[in-house]
Amino acid sequence: MGFELQKYECRNHEYLIYDCNKNNYEFGAREARVMCSQSIGLITEKILVGPVIRKNDMTLYIYNPDGSLSQPQTDDIRVFAKYLEDAGYDRVPRSGSGMSCDSEEIRKICKMAFFENFIEKYNLKKVD
Image (cartoon, rainbow, N blue to C red):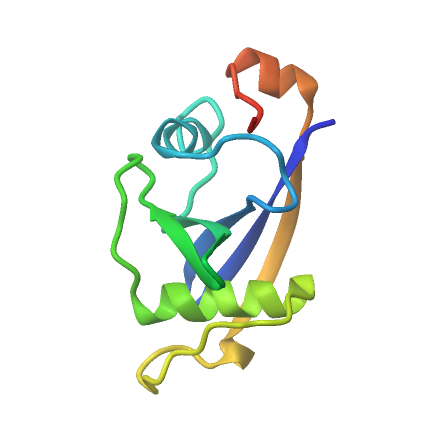
């Protein structure tokens, strides 16, 4: 079995979303670089990885295309909240700033599936 990425857009910025609860592969800096490498060619502003549940709290990791971690911005949180809502999660983080895109401006662009040949080629590891 492979894994899926969702692609969302907010104000002409595109985000890849890796749901670590629905996929069972590790996703970190290396995987972010692989997805955005020339050979794969997924162009994105940021890659949102989550939801990560810790002690009854929900968080996410945000990677830049070069694999570096990024601090969350309001648009990042709003895009992730829209994904959580679309995916049927109960608890959705909220942001109080009105300076970013509204949920009507956030839209899902596509869903991408990656299969065993891709996983083997790029040596992706299953979560233990």
